[in-house]
Image (cartoon, rainbow, N blue to C red; front, side):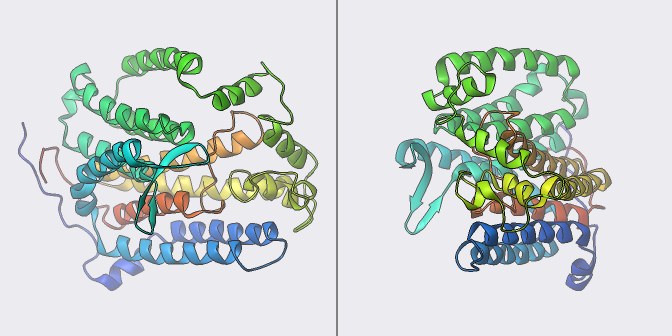
Length: 383
C-alpha cells in the first residue's frame, strides 16, 4: 500500500483573498434561481409576501451566507477528513429511521430529535458523494477496474439505497444510486462492469416492480406506461401539468395569470410541480431560461471538477454536478410525463428547505474545491 501524501495547502493565503477569489459565477446563478423561486412563490400565494415567498428568500439568504463562509474557511482537506464519518453517520441515522422514525403521509422518513425534524436520506446524498470520492482518491489506479475493488463502493451505494427504498422514497433512492454510479464511473469503472451492472439493474427493476414497490408506486408506473388510465387518481397530477404546459404557448399566460395553478387545479404547485407553473405563466421562453440557468450551473460545476488537481476534488465536484443533474432531469421529465411521478422537487425553486439544504451543502464543497484547486495529493489510505 502506498504511503499517504498530505494534500498541499495550495490556495489563497488570507481570508480576504479567499472571498475575492470565490467562483462568483456559480454564486450569481444560485442567487438568480432562488430569486425566481421567490417570484413563483409570490404567485403561488396569490400576490402575498407572507409565508412562502418570504420564508423561501430568507432560508436561501441564510444558507448562501453559510455556503460562502464555509467555502472561504474550509479547504479540501476538511471535506476529505469528514467523508467517511459523514457517510457512516448518515447510514446509522437511516437505520435509526427504520427503528424509531416518524411516519408522515404514509412514509417513515423522518427522525424527530426534540424540536428538530431530520431527514437522514438528504445527508446521504452528500455523504455518498464524499465517501466514494475519498475511496477512489485513496485507491491505487491499477485496482479501480478490478472486480474485488468494485465490491466496496457497490456495497456503499446498495446499503443506503435499500434503506431509503424501504421508507419508501423511490425518488431519493434513485438519486443516491445515480450520484454514486456517476462517481464510480468517473473514478475508473470499466465499461464491461458498467454493461454487466446495467443488465442487473434491468432485472432488478423488473423484480422491484413485481415484488417491492408499494401499490401507489406501482399504480404510478402503470399510468406512466399506459397500462391503466386513472385521470382522477394516479394520473391527475401529470394530466393537469400537461394541460398547463400545453396551453402556455411561447410567452405564457402572464405572471399571476395561470389558470391551472391560480384556480388550484394543479396539485403541489409550490413543490414538485413548480416548473409547470413557471412554464404556464412565462411560456416556453421562461422554461428555457430556467433550464439554461441550470445548464450553466452544471457547466461551471464540471469546469471546477476538471480544474481541480486532486482526484478527490474532481470526483466530489462531479458528484455534486451529478446530483444536481438528477434533480433537474427527474423533476422536469416528471412534470411532462416522461418519467413516473416520484416526488422530486426542483432545488432552489421548489418550496421547502430539505432539497435546498442538500444542494447548498454540495455547492459549499464545489466552491471550496474551486478555491483550493491547486491542492494536490497522491493516493493513499491517510491524508
